[in-house]
Image 1 (cartoon, rainbow, N blue to C red):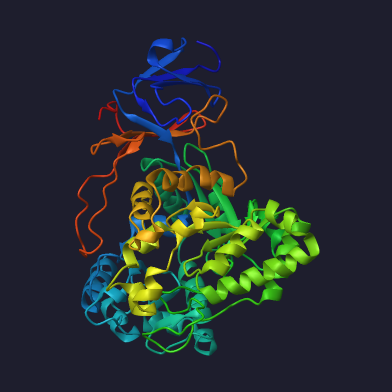
Image 2: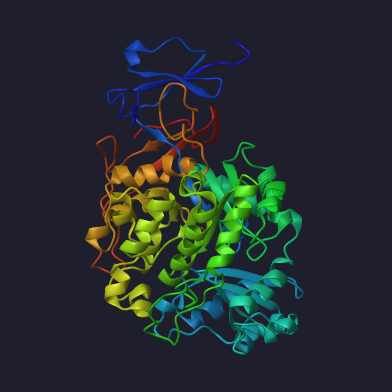
Length: 525
């Protein structure tokens, strides 16, 4: 054996467009040393039999909140509740096993699917939790319902924008109570939650994630602690720190960019996304949190520190403000310099041709979540409730953006939607609006190579000699077509329709030659 043993993976099906007949690959020193047919394979120190399994580049999830994901995976998941009564029952059952001074943390309720779209009051939550403090974030994470005890512990929230005595808080009031609630989580609990989330990601064929942190969504200790475990037999973490004018601080914290959840607006689910036309189920057009001048100055700050920038922007009014800031920054820096930075916009849900053209002009990477359309798009769902059917069908226009060359990087925004990379690929290929559908191959590229390109690692996300040996091994129960799994989508007109074909199952995930997940010894289809 050598100090750096080589491994030959053979007997599989490789997604390698440049070598479509390839069935094997050789890994040496963390890189792919050779790709080809089994019969031509070179000698290796170790041989892994793929038994017909599919090998593809591993996924990158381009927008996650790792600690929150881990807390949901190991705590109170409310994504399945279908009424205020069910939510109260879930809280009561969970709280019963906690100390009386504990904070009940939960996530994922979505009132838009309930017969009566209203969450419980602060008093009702308090009674269900036996008087404990309760913080339950809505699916969008841009609002939360809290108990009377938690409101009492946050008196400054009363004067903050977004406060409501019912206990359903938005905007600044929500940020106040969120900080207090998260402070109840110990460092050991956070590290444990981060590991749970990253291990789960690896089991789904995800080799890297983009953590979107910032002072309004997490804290510096959480952020740096997560970066410290990146790649330690776990997926790699690329951090974005969303603080206005905080490029220098982002660099100090180890971030790759000063962006991510730097909020230009809120979310559609909480009616805080900044839209140009009013919500059809409530007053107003949401809230814009930044001006064009602030966007400009942040981008100039990023340029001064050699950092990638970015913004959370969902509504068309917010995106318009962000692009005005890009145009102003380009007047100082020049368009080519702005483009070369590959600044990002997270979500980009409500777009029109003018805004899409702005993304092309300034080389903006669109970090998008196909599951948003799967869960909330189409007739009778949340987007239609908030925006009306016509505007809802124009949302999340990833197909139109891809067709004109906008760089896409797909993710989940977990725990807003679950980590589910093949489900996201299928959602992009089966958009509720046929005009916005992408090919499976294009969607897969956005969820693999697109994520690497978004962090300026252009040579990753491919199975080719010289590339990093980062890939996943899959069982494909529905078969393979064109080198990728068959991903037949449920009928979009049938709400709650079961998926007609099972998604691929991850058998192993390899990151730079190291196995970070393995499901037993058999990878047979």
